[in-house]
Figure 1 (spheres, helix red, strand yellow):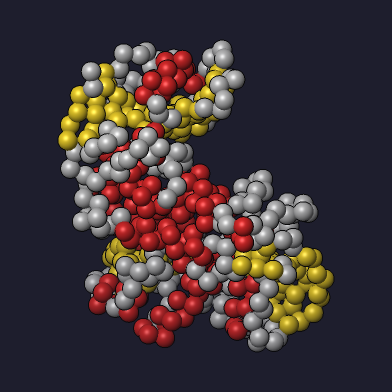
Figure 2 (cartoon, one colour):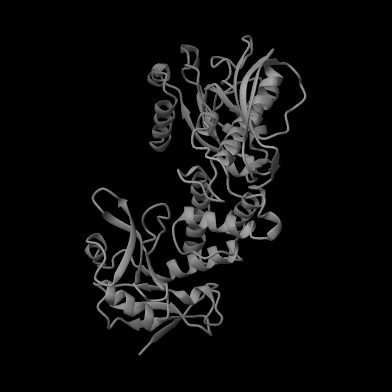
Length: 465
């Protein structure tokens, strides 16, 4: 006999085709599901042995669901996934530790000759999701909030959801040419060498003792970079150029370029970060270099004759979802709201990273990743120059989307008021931390490692020093 409890959070319900009707949560004794025609969480006694694939399969069939989410304290027998498929089943799984096959994250399995019907198991407290889960409704409401905002099913990992959202956005016939596959092999084109996050460190001095380091973190730097970014479509064309370029007219074609530059710029890695660290760069970086170097020698390039704002709507959708999920009136269940907002952040980060997968698909193209990272880097450099114009100061440390400044004031808002003007907006900066400079911190800054210095400052901030 099913037992029900009335729920106060918003949960989408409807007919049997509603996506929420495909999900259940289980513990060791009960299964939990949203009733199909009312705002009600229903409990069902578990009378099926769920310690076998056959049992989980039968549970899915009886409850007419495709997704089973175990509670964190559920004694799910991971051995049934670890040992491989039972007779008559095929299985795929992912683990927190893939080598030891411990800490199941996701699994999907299906019966052979069963018309493709799959059962999916998701442990949402693990992996990139890491949802806070104390009640079955924490899972079901989080799924509902995410699907309501994004319009795609929550069936797998954040990266999978990000790809599904990109597919939905470009599902029209008009967009098919934008995402058409390459007809040539591009694996040897060095897109990875043309896209690097910004890293920079200038050692502190004795004069800085007693001052404060203020760290400002950019809101969704990648999503912001995608807003007006043109990504190449079709096949890249190789061009031999071998000449100095001094024209100030920005290049419009997307691509990557192998270059070297004249010396003399402030962007020398000592006063200001380098425009790029390898000999390859993207179009956005090259246009920035034209503005700040006396000349740029281009050896060769891989360019596209056609480009589109392929990532624009994807980035807008994800940022809008993050903003909407902070609305407590629209989404009153706080645990699910926070879980969903955190998930959207992971979808944006991991979904963007999936573009650089080893194998190419219409929605996994390494040139798109090079484009948005290159643009994000250039936006950071423009931001640094803008803040110098306002405050007359340069950062001593830049770590990807973080700017670290030194100031006498312990109050970040007093020291750098302009940088926080858009702290709630996409691409704006928010205050992350402030720490007092000590002789030990000055000495640590001479280590030469941006990552170690950033981690050291972060540790001081967490310890309240």
